[in-house]
Figure 1 (tube, rainbow, N blue to C red):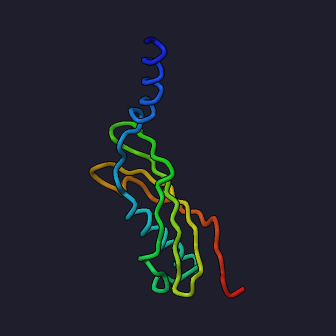
Figure 2 (spheres, one colour):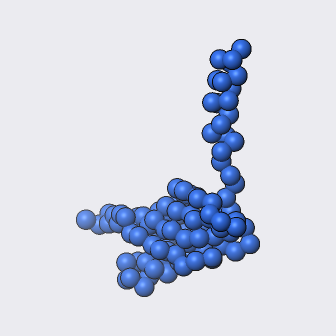
Figure 3 (tube, rainbow, N blue to C red):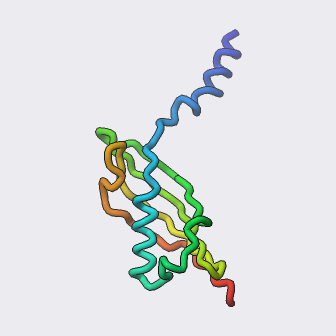
Length: 113
């Protein structure tokens, strides 16, 4: 019986440990797009927003409802090129823009080469 109880506890503990983080992908996604444009990497008018992929890689709860969130975005332009960006920012349930967004271009593919 003890082994069964321990097994159930081990199976359920990862489920219980996940706190629901705020869904704040729009703020870092917009700031990543602005950063790509300002860095003259790609003009956002050329981006096919419908194809963009969004993945929340990490969300760490800090003090007083503040979360540090790491997102991975894959942007596609109309020619089929891809731009992968990792962002880091702080957010909360009340406000997604609790901090500035740090953006990092991790991959850029050019299909014309």
